[in-house]
Image 1 (cartoon, rainbow, N blue to C red):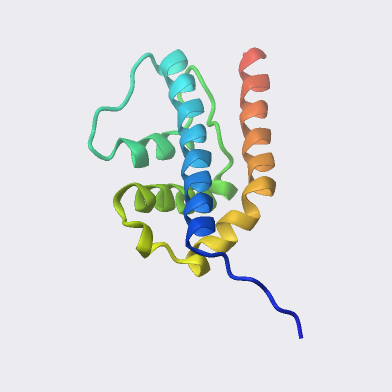
Image 2 (cartoon, rainbow, N blue to C red):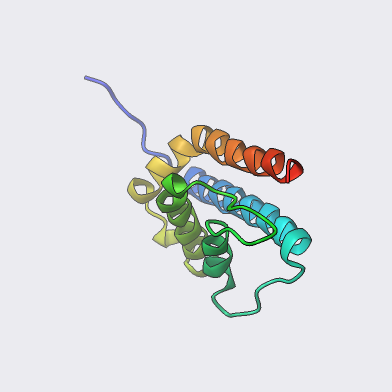
Length: 125
């Protein structure tokens, strides 16, 4: 029988902050890209969602940043980031987080590849 250790409260809290930081980092990259290409940032109260949606759209001066295949996963990380910001620590649920935590390293490679492809393609325009 395999005993799989469920993280304790401190470990779950730390993992939640790592996921929060992970998605914030992606947002920061998007903000820099949109400042450069679009010259303006979103001002809506739903700007986090709109920022992500905008990353899947092309404009005359730039192509889309992310492939549509990763949209659902990015939305999961966005929703979790929102949850962490507005929830209490006791509301963190390892079952809800586990897949995101365990997949973050591989998913970051995919996100980074999308961003690098965007940069490479933008230099060729």
